[in-house]
Image (cartoon, rainbow, N blue to C red; front, top):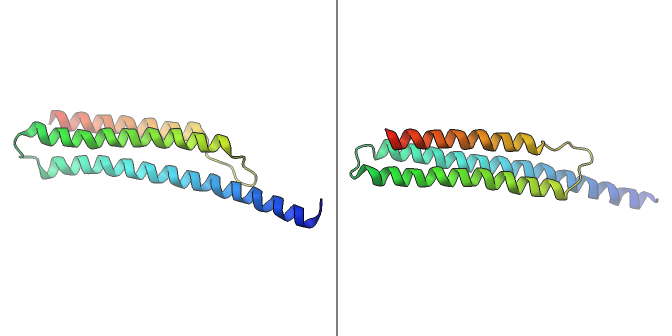
Length: 120
């Protein structure tokens, strides 16, 4: 293999590694977006605490909780799909298990937050 082919091969490998790292940053961005939805639901409760009818304020807050949960799971699924398509070379990707555990934990926290918002 010539030096030119070696360099081309290395550039391709590094591009795949950058894509894996970009996938992890995208996953983190989705997690932040989901947490922003949870924060918005909590903010609605604080702002509209004395709002009548209370069921309406709670329903709107629950919409954001559900959105957060959907975002967490979409992030986990899409991240896994991207990891399966790309090989790593010089970098080590986060395991899908770690990302899945994070999605489960944030989902559980969101469900608990939603429950508190509904029953308070």
